[in-house]
Length: 340
Ligand SMILES: [Zn+2]
Picture: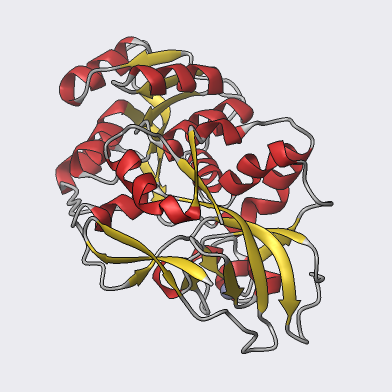
């Protein structure tokens, strides 16, 4: 079967790989129907991490081809959405709702790589959720979004304790930030401030529910947010970048007592103790436990209550994965859907 391998920064190739097989009785093998390129795939692509023949891809929807004898919640032929971390969904960490740090957790990225035709999914019951039936084609992008970017934006809004009437700042206008806007809207936020400098992303943020756009960054960005919130700062901030600048933007834009959900993969962030101390904000974040939210998100998509699939603004065949990476790296695309 074919799959995407990153050999070095900027070097993305589609290559023949072994067809996955059932190894453990809790495994499933799925045929990937759609996959995509994640903003986090751009870190190694740009050389921030060192990819060494890395199996790429961690967002996926597909059809179950084969199951191990202990798999009980799935059947061959089911359409499934999976999360980007393998989880048993039974250990104490999973039971508490933090499946992305399952004691048996495996990051799909690197270990499995779902920018491919097929994938072996360990702990299939604890990782995959079947949809109520085979979805209409137009639902597939939204279901794929649930696999990571929507689930991550949702967790960020939940971790930031967004609720009815609250004010929210979303830092980062990539796919996750845009999904954070959608989540905040769905959770009843009244003021949703999207921080973005890019016209196409500003427009999409408005479509997903942003009430205000702030193009400034740094101190000017914080001042603009305070001006929109009676000088206090927001109740909740969603941090969806992972840099020092974006984390400090979130902390400084949030009022004392407020909450920050941070989901941008942290790269060299060091928080100053004095600002943390006097900021008096709650910080809660990390790799999103997408599996916790999948049943609810699938239901919202299935009933067409939300339409997160609009975040995909380019589609390419899997064979053109290199172009998909380049388009996202050069910001010609927000998010690229790949079909094997
Ligand atoms: Zn677990």
